[in-house]
Image (cartoon, rainbow, N blue to C red; front, side, top):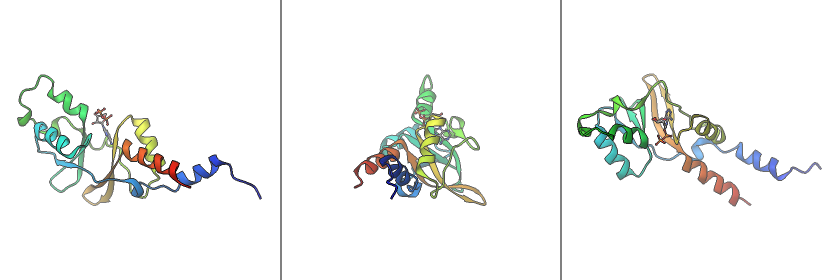
Length: 149
Ligand code: ADP
């Protein structure tokens, strides 16, 4: 009998956790909505990151809190400014898939210094947004690992 160390057991458990186990609902806005409406949506939906989609519901960009703050500084016409002017756009979006390991996605959050990553499904038209992984998802996974018997 070769006993496994606690670290080994923990690491084995971690390597079994998938994005699909912890992904949450994505909050999306159309690329034609205004910065003003995006700010309202961010408050009403209580999220820190919005995903921007085109008319075909395909991922076009990402809006963070600071993207919206930056656009608001010294700009009075927020309801006339479309979000596609200020968003981080494809192909520069970091994405993940529901079958990815959560630990790999956590590493992407750290490496890219971002708060959220869209969970996507590849279609012929582009990436369809089906979920989101955020720093909160990783915190929930961390806590449940600690609670496991
Ligand atoms: P904040 O800017 O509010 O601190 P983030 O750290 O998540 O929030 O975002 C930093 C920058 O990275 C922003 O300009 C944002 O548009 C961009 N960003 C956020 N998430 C992603 C992502 N998944 N892929 C590419 N860029 C992203």
